[in-house]
Length: 455
Image (cartoon, rainbow, N blue to C red; front, side, top):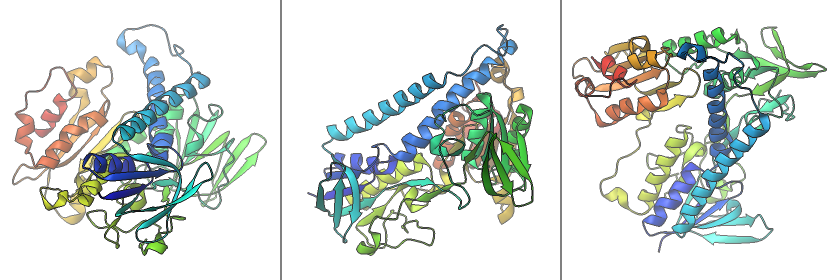
């Protein structure tokens, strides 16, 4: 029987373990923090739980538009209750993962795993014990952790990392967010909805530098409407504690004072202390484990999946990689087996309005000289959006003008993360805009805008 040892129990690791076990492998999972994934259960899920609460607060302030009375003070934040809610959600999800793995016969070891050779993993157990596992295949799925610039020294009180803000000790009076990528703008949305004054330091000329410029502009308009202060073209280079809170110093001489500062400037892979060199596994200059399209390292029976391999840092991608790795280990790639096409992975930004995209971007097409057809419909023309009193945003679909095949698209607006699934399916399956137009969708619904945009 094939023995698979998985180091790291996040979305990639637990999917490897579950799928490999279902295919008949003997599986040992080594995890030193939380089964389900630190990044997943300490970052992704808590942040989205807080965003759901923030969204409810934001909605309560718009009640008058729906014919309800109560005013803008209809709800307030109960920090203790919010913390309990987050703990309940993450605990339930973690328990579900652990129960599934146990039911499949996966052996889970609590401790740190370290490769000591091409086929061996030494485990230092949480209870102080030690052992060595011999494996036919090894999967490294240790994820990532927040990146901290040299000038930042988090203290968990005023200078916060992303993992110290679920929720923070108190709702900040004035939060300064450093970093305007996906994580940064989600925190801006979250805390501005919770009642904090928020300032955002934007090192580029617009937020979300890797997203469609029109999408970024729509989000900036909403942030400015909320009173968020944007410091564009400023790169933070220092932070100091003051009697009143903190002051962030920027490289252009500007300073931003606030009660708290949150550092959200990306992540780094957890590839150190894994003993990869002892197994002859190659990493790149940033510490990401180098893999091929099967997620194999340069040592064929050693794999890496999830954030640690640096392909696309999304939990959904990590989970898919995990499944594909298990299938490759167990030989399913010799039959029908599709590689992951990272260009067709859907992603979302859980701000207000929500943002989601998939496939070819308009700017990317123009940069490469590719001919495309771009169609766009605002939610202001949607009956359901008007019923919801939330007509913000739009649907944009990108297609091939010669064949009509859907190449990509983006959604800005309420339920964008759900709506993008239709476009993602079209991109993955090679459907045409005519297929969307001919789909008889529910009326009234936000999804009607997808068919309208494909017209």
